[in-house]
Length: 316
Image (cartoon, rainbow, N blue to C red; front, side, top):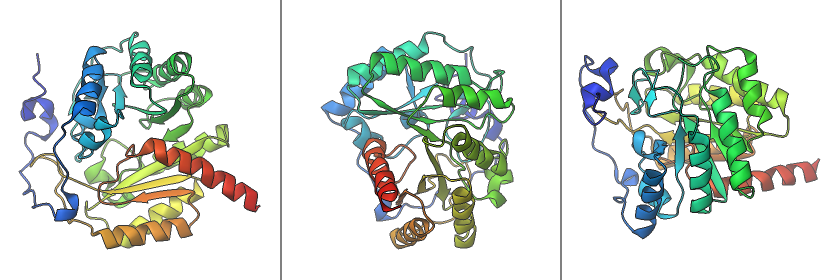
């Protein structure tokens, strides 16, 4: 049995990579260690339902704040990914078979947590014919039954090796927000996201809008991987051409010395400039701060996203 707490077993594909020095974090990156009753309650519910969270698996710096408020991003289809992105701390390897009871357990946890908004993400499952699309759809439908008042945001894989019907299954289940992260600028894909294709991911989000024009779409990138500002602004233009509603930009943080190095820490002032530029390009919502992550403050952001759309429609 693999022990996913041992780095070489968690990331066998990175074991031979040379170590990269992890620079000291600036003061605007520091966060408090997770504590408190709310954190412990959320953790207990996740354990009771045998659920994985991307908060833990990816080492999110905001886990203490989010879990203390009862917010957790649930990661379905197991905790082992078939991809080996150099930025990601999720374990890589051959996953177990899909658990047919998982959608029900996720829905029950959402109900017990009393969530107004939930984010569901997953590992990549290139070993499954539809990439896990039907599993996503079943999870959405199970939440609708158990917690009909909860709005649902999904953060999906790219379904790169699947036919077009895979994406159609997920969109037909009608999540409120469809998120798929581009992660970085296209020039860094071979190094950072070698199993993915930039323009495929972009087209995936564009197709969501074609299938359901009313569905909110969302995507995010990390900065500090070696990109420049011009490339970031080009990604913004590409996203707007695909009619993406909501953009997130956050600082890349290196999980271990074997992961992609941090090129630099982007300053809060630079993030503010990115946000201003993105809003000028027509996004309904932009979140650009050092600690921004895809699902950080997702519930509050969803309310603001709806309000922004209504305001835009009223102005037409």
